[in-house]
Length: 244
Image 1: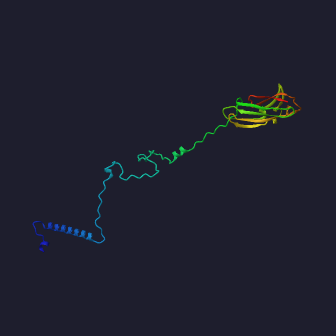
Image 2: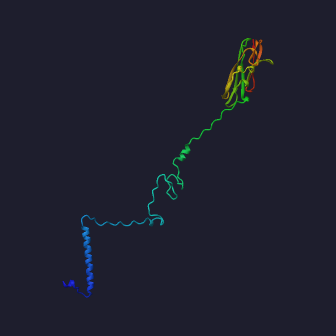
Image 3: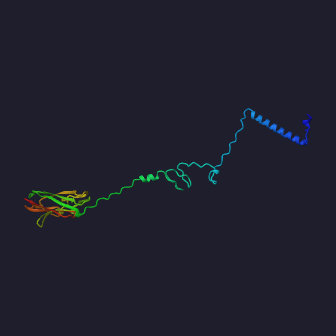
């Protein structure tokens, strides 16, 4: 017991006391660790994860260690971003979905076809028929026909002022629709194809006419007469017939 209280040795007693104090501290720490490890409800020591190597060691020294953001569908592409498959993003512009397709299928208005113009007089063909079997004191019927002789469609028709059927005997003017516009039927302007024709029937009473729709009181004499048709300035057509 005296050896414990009074250290014996060649060194100074204070050295022995410091060594004993250090040993006592170590024993106390070991005891505390054992008690903490064996206490109920306490888990074992938590392993400290090894530090993950920084991505800066593998990439650009100036790049951020934060993970790259996932691009949002439909977001505007910015310079340096990974281009979307199927197209190259334009910096600063956001393409409108479907804009190009809508422009491609937009129907274009069809040009409005121009309306046919009036037939030229040089393209019109006039014909007159009738007078066969004409008798003194009986009315005779004549047919005036106007044909489109052009190679394209055009508009034609006539007014009493632009059409005439005239009956003559030599140079003697016997009868004319100019004396009474009601005697020559009006034909409204009509679009006619090449070769198509318009026609009108005109009755002659077999007497001489005068302006104002007046007729002579007596019938004409038997003989040879000529019916002349003129329409819209086209070349006149003539037809000779006999009255018996």
